[in-house]
Image (tube, rainbow, N blue to C red; front, side, top):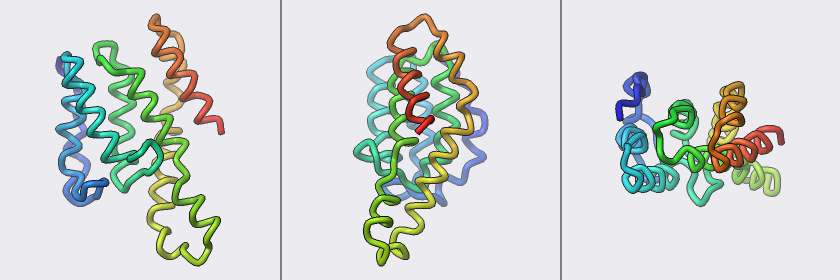
Length: 157
């Protein structure tokens, strides 16, 4: 399936970091996530989640740059893991690991400042596309609708 992730090359993936180091592998993972093959797409999503929202709540520098592509894939009917993509977006918008740590331990703020910024940028990136949620909430797939409802609730908090 051809998914027009046309602006993937506009992101300097080699210059930004994910949980493994360089975020250079993210374009390939996003492309694999668009695969017609469910197993391929699920494996790509698992690996992508580890890189941009580790443990379901720790975002990385590359997370905000990845979010628009996740939204694009979630909107495409042929993508096999759409509900799981929305669940990943829910995890990203809910992530406050570093903010919570900085609030609890203000002396660590200078160590966590970049990470807090990444969380805020990632949340802003998810919220920037919330206007497309009605299309997902009206989908015929109940699992997709449920995931969209959860994402809408997470965005609202």
